[in-house]
Amino acid sequence: DIEQIRQDYWYAKPRTSNQYQKYSTNPNDNTNIDIGRYRIITPEEIQEELKKYVLNIDSIFVGCGSAGSNIGNQLARTDLISNGILIDYDKLESKNLRNQAYLSGSCGFNKSQQLAGIMMQCKDRYYGSNPYRYRANRIEDINLDMYKAKYMFNCVDSLTARLHALEKTQARYIIDTRYHGLDCTILFVDTEDEEQMKYYKDGLEQAIQTFVKDVSVPKD
Image 1 (cartoon, rainbow, N blue to C red):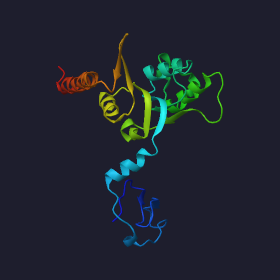
Image 2 (cartoon, rainbow, N blue to C red; image 1 turned 135 degrees about the vertical axis):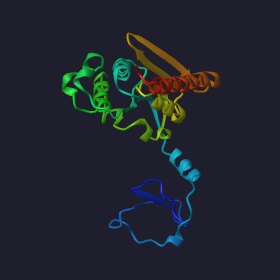
Image 3 (cartoon, rainbow, N blue to C red; image 1 turned 180 degrees about the horizontal axis):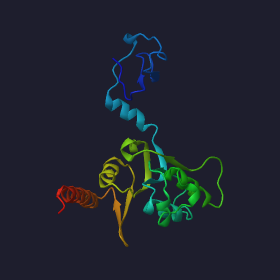
Image 4 (cartoon, one colour; image 1 turned 120 degrees about the horizontal axis):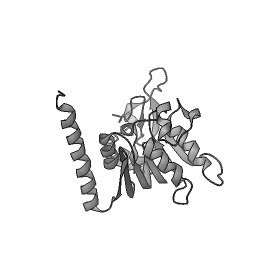
């Protein structure tokens, strides 16, 4: 038996080796192998293996809209962060220009991609590739276990996405920022403080329930 962890490929480890081998699920690409040479890979073992490849970074930006783009733009000019992962699947529209840190030339492109470029240019100097990587995906499709950051900026619009990021992150601190018209709420959460984490999680769950009730009430 071989453990399949993704639809397009799977990993197997021969009994006589400690090295995983990658095989495609496409019959045209697949290699004939002797199943008897392999042992079962448990989900727990896969997670332990993935921990060896955890990327230590300064920051994770979940959402690169009004809050995420402006915070990233300003922080990149300081010494507080020097690298990070920017996560947002959305593309920039002209209506976003009034309150987001982008220019008209970025319209039609992915927000996280454009913000990565902006943050890189905010540095006095840089070497090699852009230290700010981007992922044009929904947060639910990202394996946050692969990123161990000092800060996670939870700026995505969706409350359920914020809750998902909270439950999966390995960041030391969470900065939750959201706008309410002209008002702005900022929460700074120490993930090693159980009381703060409970307060933050309970608040998100309550807000989600309130939203569900509001949209379920028929409008007159």
